[in-house]
Image (cartoon, rainbow, N blue to C red; front, side):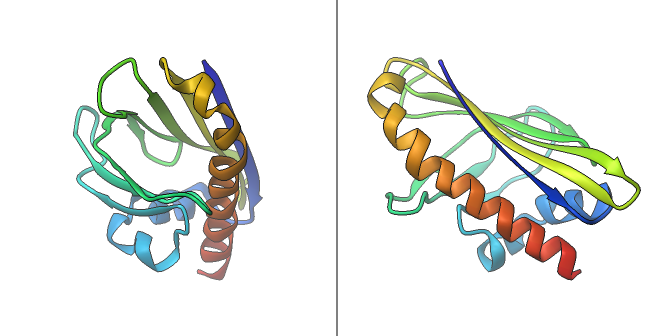
Length: 144
């Protein structure tokens, strides 16, 4: 198992960050890592997500929403080809720091047979993708 965690402080209310995260049709306009999401942010729903790490190849996953708690957490679980091969639990958390500031935590827990083989790219390309998305989210939220 491998866990990748990044975070960033954003100077807006939690509702602003949540609104941007839930506006799936706008992802291609601002998100350099998660290029698109189709579906509904409802527990148990299946999404179609297209991710493109910097310097990496785009991948399309069909994750299942595990948690969609407004202004707090959005989490899904996806897998590559077969369960147990390369699974990921992707998580966005919004922690209020004050009335108009949050800590956005973007993480993923990876498990499965291929994780040891992919560990290096997870800690470079995927981490860069998370951080690029965090920065883009901060810029979009603070400009609104």
